Picture 1 (cartoon, rainbow, N blue to C red):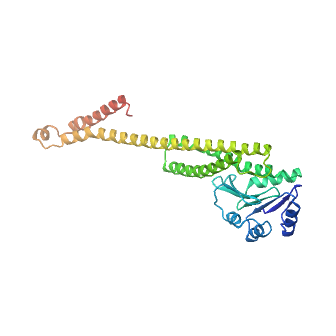
Picture 2 (tube, one colour; picture 1 turned 30 degrees about the horizontal axis):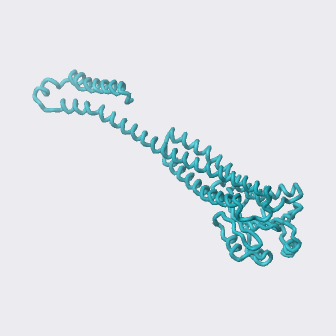
Amino acid sequence: MTSYLLDRHGHAKTAIERDEIESRLENGDFFWLDLHAPTEADFQLLRDVFGFHSLAVEDAEHFGQRAKIEPYENFYFLVFYGVAPPPDEDRLVELHCFFSDHFLVTVRRDEAPACDALRERYERQGALAEPIRLLYQIVDELVDSFFPALADLDDEIDALQDSILADPSDEQLQRIFELRRRLSRMRTVVSQERDLAQRWVGGAPDLPHLSPEGEHYLRDVHDHLVRLSERIDGYRELLAGAMDTYFSAAQRRLNTVVKQLTVVAAIFLPLSFITGFFGQNFGWLVRHVGGWPEFVFLGLGLQLFAIALMVVYFTRRGWF
C-alpha cells in the first residue's frame, strides 16, 4: 500500500499535492493523511505545510519510540503499537499520529492492516467519522491486533507443553526463551499503552472533541489493554510452568538413564565375580574344573542363573 489522503466524504487520493493540503487546512475540513514508508519530502511537508513542532517531526522520523501522547499548541502527537498479521506476529507495528480537530496524520514504516481496513471501510461508507471516533477506531484496531497473536501463542504453548512431556529437547527450551522474549516485548508496549489509556480515562490530557461519547470509546480501549495485560501475564506464567516441566522431564529422563545403567552394572557384577573366581590358579580348581561339563554347568550355568536371578529381582522391584 502507498500513502493516501482520505477526505471527510470517504474519497481517497494516492497523489498527495501540497496545494490541496494547504487548501484543506485553510478551510478547516477534516481529513486523514496516511504516510506509508515516508520520505524526506513527506517530513518536509509536515514541517512546512502543517507547521508541526520540530521535536514532534523528529520523533516521527525515528521509529522505536515508547507509546506516548504529547500535547502541542494546536495538535497532539501520539505513538501507538499493534502487532503485524500472520505470519509476522513477532513484529510490532509502530504508528505515529498527529491529531487535531481538523486533521489526522498517521506515519508508519510497515504495513498496518488497521489503517488499510479503516480506509476501505470509509471508502465504502462514503463518510469519514468524527475526529475522536476515527482516532479511537485506529487505536482500537491496533490494540485488537494483539488478541489473535496471543491466541496463536496460547496454542503454541499448549503444543509445546505436550511435546515436552513426550520427549524434552534443547529445541523446546530454546523456543520457550524465544516466546518469553516475544511476550516481554508485548508486555512492555501494552503496559505503556495501558498507562496512556489510564491518563485518557482520568481526564488528562484533554483531547479535542472529547465528548462523553468519546470518553466511552477511550474507556473501551483501556478495558482492552487491561485484558491484554492480564493475558500476557498469564502466558508468562504458563511459559514459566513449561520451563519447570522441561527441567522436570529432563531430570526424569536422566534418572531413567542412570537407573538403566545401574541395572546393567548390577547384572554384570555377579558375572565378574564368577569369572574371577574360576579364573584363579588354585590346584584343586585346575585339577577338577577343567572339562566341558564343568565349563558348561559351572561356568555358563552359574552366569545364566545369576542373570535370571537379577532380572527376577529387578522386575519385582519395578526397575524394569
